[in-house]
Amino acid sequence: MNLDDRLRLVPGFSLFRRSSSLVANPTTQGVSLRGLGSTGASRTLVLWDGVPLNSPFGGWIYWTRVDPISLERVEVSRGASTSLFGDKAMGGALGLFSEARHKAGGTLGYEMGNERTHELSGAGSYFLGPRWAVSGSARGFTTDGYYIVPAYARGPVDTQANVQFAAVTARLDYLTDRQKLFFRADILAEERENGTKLTQNSTSLGTLAANYTMQQGASTYNALLFHNREEYRASFSAIGAGRLTERPTSRQSVPAESTGGAAFYRHAATKWNLLAGGDFHRAEGYSNETLIPTGFRLGGGVQTQYGFFTQGDYAKGPLRLFGGLRGQDAGNGTAFWSPSGGAALALEKWRLRASAYRAFRAPTLNELYREFRAGNAVTLANALLRPETTRGVEAGADYVSGGLRFSATAYTNHLDALITNVTRSVTPTLITRQRDNAGAATARGMEANLNYRWHAVRAEASYLFADSRYSTGERIPQIPKHQGSALLAWSRRGTLLAGGLRSSALQFEDDRNLFRLPGFAVFHMTARQALPYGLALHAAVENALGREVVVGFSPTPLIGAPRLWRIGLRWSSLP
Image: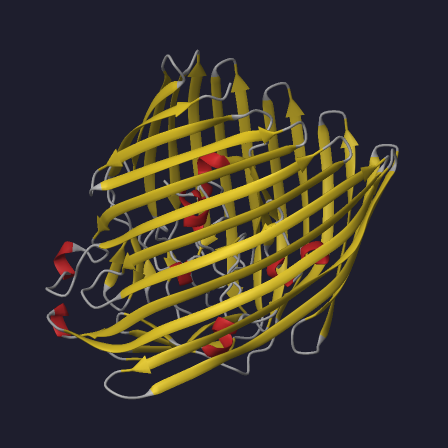
């Protein structure tokens, strides 16, 4: 239904929790790739047409902002990309690209499913003369959700976790052969019930963005500006023995805003390419918390970052050399340098590659100043956090022959001052953790992907091995050793049939490795049939076998989505 669940088919793509954004608190929706993280903050930068989607306060992602149907493609860049994108890309980058506006027309769709799930969406574009185009999209969604506590542990305080949201995007494009300019505005309003009678959260946010590109021969000039405002609101409670009673503990309001921009120059030649530019980002946010029965807690501040970067490559026969360097202020007056370098060798059907890099991530305002509670698990803030760093090397090979594509990569990352949730105490009624620089850790592994197309059939299989451990030997929480996915699809004459399998080995909830989250495998199916008059009928089932997946502890076990099905009809006037 949402983009995060689709991206989970990419091994190594993980959020802080295994839960879908359909029911999960948005503060747990930070992205990590290759097992580099164990908190809600994102160690992967997510860009939507070049504009960051990461929350200015906490770094997490509101996946409900983006309708997957409106996207033309998603590019996943694993490995540190800070030499180009900055500290938010310590674990990689995701690029979301909207569909190109070549034609005027529109779409309208409706879906319904179990758990009283309904979605209505639409989009349209119109050309205002030969150079200007206006477009927009809207999406409304509601579901009763599901219980996040298993039946055997459920009590009177438990309710279904659910979400209702509305997302609207408007865009104005100016298009010529040499110049492109767009202005975009998008807003999101969502409300969630978090699984008990007294816990809810809601968010309202909006973004304004502009991007200008000019092409002159082999040179390209680009400038980007954006401004974002959001407010996150949440209520928290303590659960009594047997989940028989619940009492409120606090209410939070977290207003935040950010302003940023970038400008860069790119030159493309036959044997060499060069990219150089600079960017800045200012974020301000505060956690206003009312304690119950009495008390008030305030935390927050301003974080200003700026950087300069350059990246280039040079080809000599079948060998191509790459290099990049970025200097950035971490937001506290400390400068970090992020170099990267590598080489690729093309040998007919094979491509061999290797690279090395150094990267860092500054703590978010959320990690520095905001305390939160999930059931009877409390996580404290830490205003003394230092930036975390990583040094990594990787090597791999790609093979392409006809409809067959294969790639494999081995990597090692050495992390220092890793920011994670450190357990301070554990009792039967309360778990207390605090964000802290946990010290050194190592993340090493191997990933492989196989893609095959034969006439109307497409098959894909992916696997990730990730061994991420602290220097003391404990595994980094929320990171399984093994992840895999497989997809088989058949498409012909307007008919699509597909099935997908996603599996994950066990992982741990906490830094002490006390709470085990067992491994799982879930199966998904989808079908689509084109109809006359621009109509298409589609149906899908997620977790088709109804497996119960443990996604966390509070300390009561928390579970993921049961079997969910939906069916819908979509109309499009576009070719």
